[in-house]
Length: 361
Ligand SMILES: NC(=O)c1ccc[n+]([C@@H]2O[C@H](COP(=O)([O-])OP(=O)(O)OC[C@H]3O[C@@H](n4cnc5c(N)ncnc54)[C@H](O)[C@@H]3O)[C@@H](O)[C@H]2O)c1
Ligand SMILES: O=C(O)C(=O)C[C@@H](O)[C@H](O)[C@H](O)COP(=O)(O)O
Ligand SMILES: [Zn+2]
Image (cartoon, rainbow, N blue to C red; front, side, top):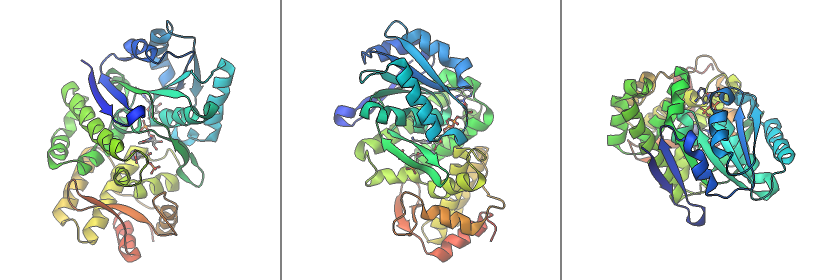
């Protein structure tokens, strides 16, 4: 059964298709774009699992070639973008060619960025194969790569033409990566309404063992929430910044620990706990509400403490966050489930939260 969620952006609108076995049917969807050439970008882990399935389905439409990237967050950099661009040149890609991003968020962000800059922008299709990518990164058109100076410091907004999430691919995903996906799902629960958050909380064990029915409900719920926010604020001039809940803390953890040491979803999960604690210190959340956020993150199998990273370095990292201005750090804070603001916090409270979270003074 295929579930469709629409991202409504006028001429740049597109559907998110979700369901089992969609890679085999991909050609029917990609064919509608009438491409002159198809370049599949994937990585060395996903290639043996799923490349042939997607390539076989697309071969009747246009010549198909592939670019295989090394696997990992530490390769989300310019050198990988260069590899994709070289692959496009070697394939003779033109302005009517289509890139297919087959993999997790790292492949999606790199391939999307290459699509945004090749010949000043060509179409691309997201084929997300991790839980995190199916509920978050494949939707919304944020593309880009890291710099040694920080996470996602370069990139473009470039919307995909289509997102095709084959839920069967999640069956080969390691348990740690399933938990990482839950980091973003809990974030969506906190941004959405109490009913969605409670459903996720109640069904944590079922999601972690990939129960088909629950998983379909959660992927649809998260895609609907994110699609709704992106449709209202494509380029983050307002409400879209709330999708950054937990990320000011999370991105600092990823960078300080070394890209790839903490998974993005792990850092986001822990970041949600820190953001909730800061919200409590600001008087917006009760200790019980903080306890509930912490319990949700813990029961997803995600870390809730930092253990030993240096506090002042974290503050320096957060000053470089894209929401900061003039050296003032701005956080998404919670006032309860479904209620957020984006604001500066007193430095003293921030230091207390970081110490509470396990940062080393
Ligand atoms: N653009 C956005 O809006 C957005 C949103 C959230 C996250 N992100 C970015 O996404 C990245 C994290 O994405 P991720 O969690 O998917 O990590 P990832 O892309 O590194 O994938 C996780 C791991 O799973 C492997 N893998 C992928 N699919 C598999 C499958 N079906 N079976 C077995 N192994 C598989 C990958 O090779 C990798 O080793 C981060 O760089 C983050 O910044 C972007
Ligand atoms: O789509 C968005 O908007 C998000 O913020 C989603 C996040 O989960 C994602 O990690 C995003 O890449 C973070 O964006 P950044 O602008 O803080 O780098
Ligand atoms: Zn994220």
